[in-house]
Image (tube, rainbow, N blue to C red; front, side, top):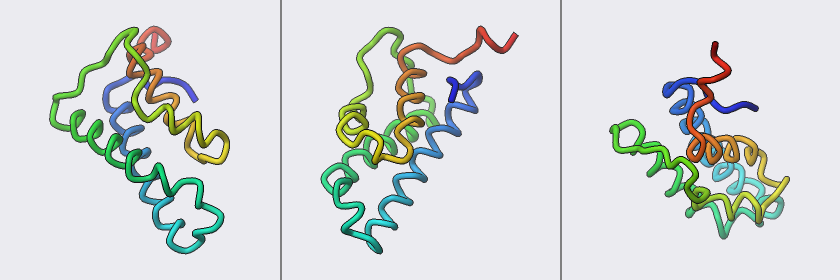
Length: 106
């Protein structure tokens, strides 16, 4: 999965991440044993992603070139391959720190 080339693509990735959290939350209600590792992290992940998405939609969002990783990345590392959309979150983090992939759009 590559970094998005446009702002709209980036906003779409964020929307997808928020959707994925909602899906995990729904699945947790039905299969609480299998998704128990997510329980301590789901609210934190949800609030951080929704805040970032809201900032994007409202125009308050700012990229942070060469800045620190996004706060939710500790959750991505902690859950590892059990998090089905971990790669999506890694791309969001990379885009936040490195910007849009405008060089490959030529």
